Image (cartoon, rainbow, N blue to C red; front, side, top):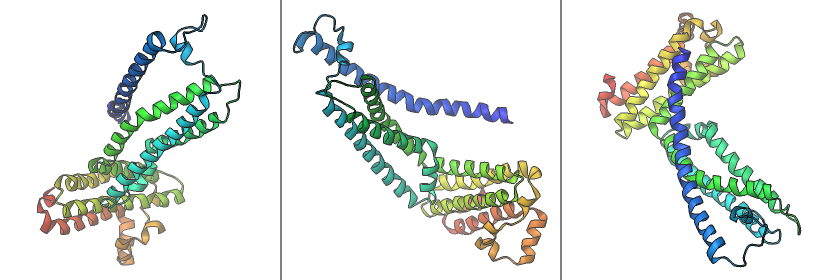
Length: 312
């Protein structure tokens, strides 16, 4: 089973890298070719004072930074990175806010994503390094390696902006959100159910309930918006989540089947008679019951607005 999962994940990982590297390589290549063409033209044909003997070719001449003149350029690089960070934050915040109005939990999911966090960290670190580099210049000293590193990091941040926006759009696509919710909930439940620590087990029960309710909310919003594709995907996601759970249920710790304090205050459990709760614990079916309870709510809501969903 694990080898099959690995084989399934590799193509998606490679495709994800291509979605980043290919556009970044194209943008960086075009920019480099355009700049190099004009720079070599100026260096060999239309430039100012001729290159002195022993100063090397155009590339060596380019990296001979003048400490008296490079300061303004470094300050501009730091400001440019900060401006790009501001643009990225503004666009991403608007997209996340608009999506959060329709689907709950999007903001938390966005902030938990490693790619989003890594991109923000990259821009912040590049900006701080650029500011520090601009203050390291002296009248007779220019840190060439540091200046080149800041230039490359700034250029990398610029060409990364467009692929990152594309990644955010893919991340916030409704079908991808549903897939992420299901995958995260499945991973949390499988890990918590097979734990040995009772406290950790009880903490892992709440994400399962939250995921089921979140998928139900998305289904309800999709039914209201006449979005049959998303509603169908959410219904299937609840089913897939329960099926994956049933695969490891026989290996779950006995404490997992006890309704812990973290979920006992859930409205569906609060409304139940204590005897019914004890029966759920004895039958080890509180999670399956919760999933069926969510299906019942979806069925009632879809009965009038989108009855086709009830045939899934």
